[in-house]
Length: 82
Image (cartoon, rainbow, N blue to C red):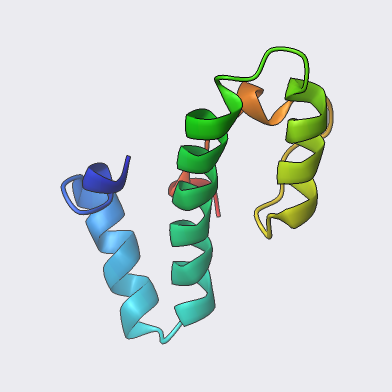
C-alpha cells in the first residue's frame, strides 16, 4: 500500500497537492492510517479470542475514523477517499 502511494499517478498527484497546499496534517493522517493497518494485521491477525477487544482498542487510539459496525479487520484505508 505504501509503495502504491508513490507509484500510482493519482496518488502521486494527491501527495503533491497536499505538499504544495501545506497540508501536513493530512499527510500525517495518511501515514498513520498505513501504520494502523500494518499494526492491526501484524498483531491482530494472530489473535483468536481477543479480536473484538483488539478492534475496539484500535478504533479508540486511531485518529483515522472507521465506519460503524464490523471490526477493524473488515476495512482498509483509501487515501483518495480523504
